[in-house]
Image (cartoon, rainbow, N blue to C red; front, side):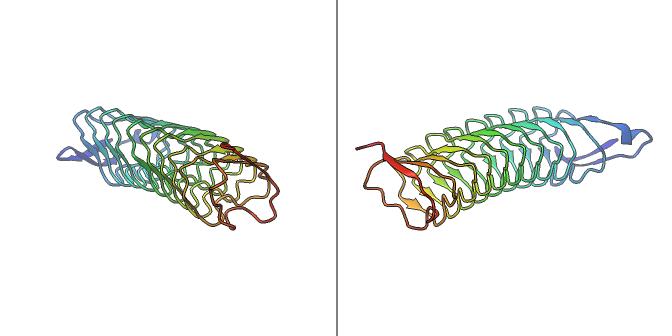
Length: 259
């Protein structure tokens, strides 16, 4: 096996020798500062794990696209994870995004169907569009206080997602962000949230309880469109709910935090 490295950027790995196909664990050489565009993309080998040295600061777009790794540790030297960096890593089961990371691109972990847990570092400012789309094994997510926005389609079709905890700095949730999260049972939106996009929680068939914070000003059409919602808690009687936000046939009990 050979590493193609240029000016600190790992461009590609090459399996050249007899026995290379049996390699299961790869250690990236110390001194590499960037993992380049599609360096490991669509790797045909069944590599189980890749060790990234703490000299790496950037994982570029599509670096591990379609790679078959099962585990990965991102060192706390990394500050940027590019678009599609781990997209379609179909065997990846868990990932920890360190506190050093300040940028996560769109589609970063999209299509990681076996991803069961993700720990998001406390300095990430936003969750990109489609970032965790189709992560069908993900069961719970905690959004840290650093995050101010969740992008469009960010967690769409995360079918096993049962709970999500939102940080207290979150201001906006994009359109279709949690659409088809069919195991999600309850949602509590912090007072910091001011905007919820169209169909953000549409077709969350298990959703029965919703609590809305007092900062909410904009609610997109079909935001909570679902037929099983039973309890909705509003911050006060002054909050105006658009007629299309909820399914017209839904029968739920409305209560207020402030009487």
